[in-house]
Image 1 (spheres, helix red, strand yellow):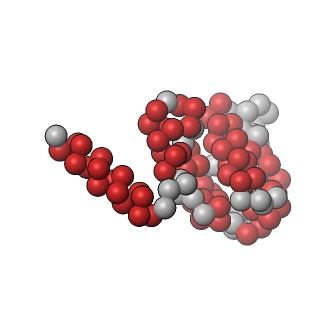
Image 2 (cartoon, helix red, strand yellow):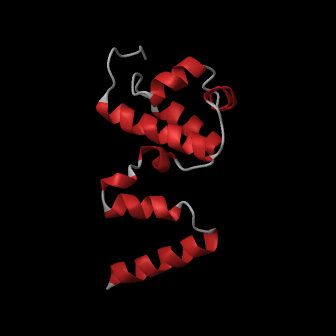
Image 3 (cartoon, rainbow, N blue to C red):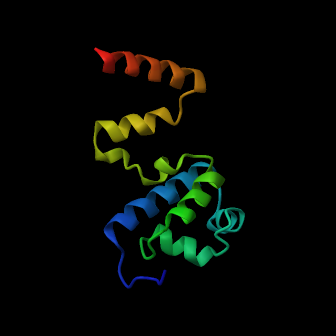
Length: 110
């Protein structure tokens, strides 16, 4: 997809999220671009600036390399309690997540 002249609002939110997750795992743009099948540091830079709108395949590749779910790339923790909950689960152990799912499932049945 061609580079935009000005940032797309939603693409910018996703791009900032990609940047934050990339920095969280200690990768440079170059490292992420070339180890995620993206293959272009410039394209990743444009994505992070909201100047390019990522497709699902690109997001999947980036998520895989960052070790996160695809949903983590499009989740904006500032978007309310549900988004905050999704973000908080990223740091939980698999056992804690299973317990939380069980509790939430039980609460839903009530």
